[in-house]
Length: 103
Image 1 (cartoon, rainbow, N blue to C red):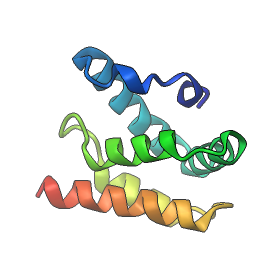
Image 2: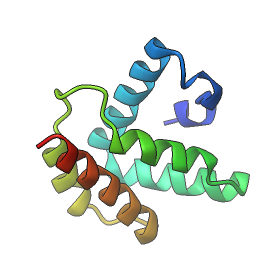
Image 3: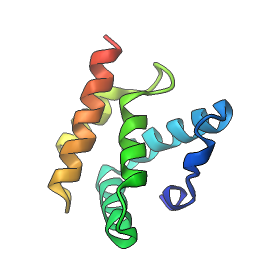
Image 4: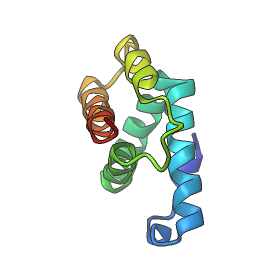
């Protein structure tokens, strides 16, 4: 998950970078939702900034392709206990927005 630290928000206009970044965000969330939420939460507290959190939430609302199993990710996330319930809820809301967009 350290890729979040190195995420370049200024490269969001680069199509290839954006696709790679978006796909990686979803893969990391799908693999380990608890660690994903914990890392994102700790990073925001450590940097005293929500800039990357906001960026990640935006990416989650806009999956780059329809091969991403949004319903599976949502179910797994909902079954996961996390240290930051508020952030978990924001992530869950973002996934639900993506699900609605892709109906």
